[in-house]
Image 1 (cartoon, rainbow, N blue to C red):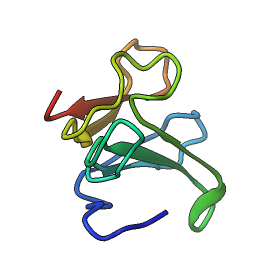
Image 2 (cartoon, rainbow, N blue to C red):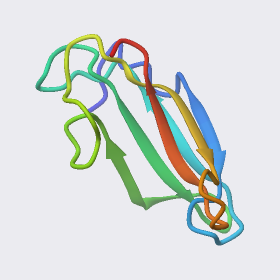
Image 3 (cartoon, rainbow, N blue to C red):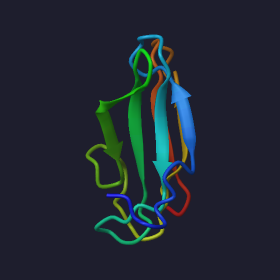
Length: 102
């Protein structure tokens, strides 16, 4: 749920994560409040569609998501920076998320 101070869109990154030739968008929400405290942060990921972003396939992650290191704590600001690049050279981009206050 959007709240004042979430800072939705503070960081943006575009890359082709699903290999369909369309840009997919990672949106940082470093001010998102989580059970671990205020400003734990999150990143929302939206796949690109033929003419617009595909919101039906959108997903979000934070440090309370499985396989994400650490845990959500106040002031982590997970999502402060995002990159969507092909880090492992498999032809599809992967998501990397920075946590400014970790």
